[in-house]
Length: 578
Image (cartoon, rainbow, N blue to C red; front, side, top):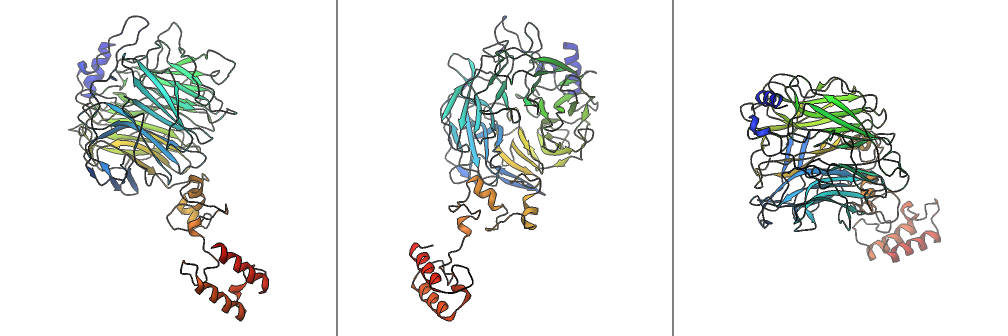
């Protein structure tokens, strides 16, 4: 293994010492991890600057961690973002991140914000439990519109534990807190397919930074109000996937992916449970399959000093399931798998529920001496595979100067589109919050038209969290872009802001007191005959003139006949102020 590690590191231009496996503790104890309270909480600067907004062609990066005036907080930092999209009103978004109030301290908290206009604007940043050390946020919605925020905390006894917070108001407040066991690098997924009642939530975390070692998995079958005691994937064995994600298939099967915890891994483990969804099964069981990264390749966990992210990951192992076909996809950064001295983004596919896996497909289209890192994948309901990643391909002499790129596949991952740069060049080595990294991951959720991306970058010269909509919006989920719906007359947009009225009403962005599907701000008062916006005597006397003249505008009842009924109907409107 050390020989393979040496080969991998030399190919990637990284010293062996930077990826030496971590020491293992005594049996039954977790190994040490980087999440610890090193610094006291810092004081948030009071200086603000304009919030970041950066455009590159059709791609717009919009800063999400903003203050009460919608501005950037100068001198703080934010990374490891995650995003949730409310399926009951998809213009309602919630994001979470690690919030560092000052770059002079690596003490982090659970930052969050929400949007009710599809990410075009963001509410002021909030903190869940201010003053409490928190990390590794993951945010998701269930199909009833409840938001969940999973968060690691380190106790004063240096214990790695997780809490899950629940919001029923679109992520504005988080009044419910549940102890969730957990550990370092937790990820969770919600079953969108087979449950009938409260949400089924499945969690996985690393073998290290784990108070419940060797158990790495648990579940909640009551919508996050309680979590089961953790269990192992491979009782008595050593197949312990780490630094990965969780996904649920259309049949309710739960998948967890990861590699070896200590450094570059020449294998990936994929654990699948078919009975975790069954409330009658007290201890879920797993089958564990392997993806062999042969030929000196390795799942690129830690970058080391010569990488774009020296103290952090080069990327997680991503897993997604096609919601129709059930095909399973894994995307990971790898050293040396495709040659060229690069770290590349590789995709693997299984058509038999994770039992066997295809040969790797290189996702990025540039492979010479390049860092392609933070590969992030999601699969749309129509089977499109979306992937974003960072790359220093324009500055191969420096790992720190990168752009973020996007590519997609519409043929089940056999081929990918040409990479598209979606940001200007940015420097991953600046804005470090007393911790030499920009976090460990990004997050993305796809729909039939495009994708919601949340990512950390330094476009404004410091670490901040940005939202980007890739492709047109599809707030009503009909598979047609909102701009086309409006242009074709299939959706109304009375205030001409580019958002269908129905979506604004559903997200609570506008009011519709009479529930007629028209925003109140767009409705006119039929008694305001002179159109002044003020109902006064001028309108009353104008109506008398129209009534006397038999003008059609006096037909308040709309029956084609102007009579006393219209006169009294107008009086009622006038008296009620419309």
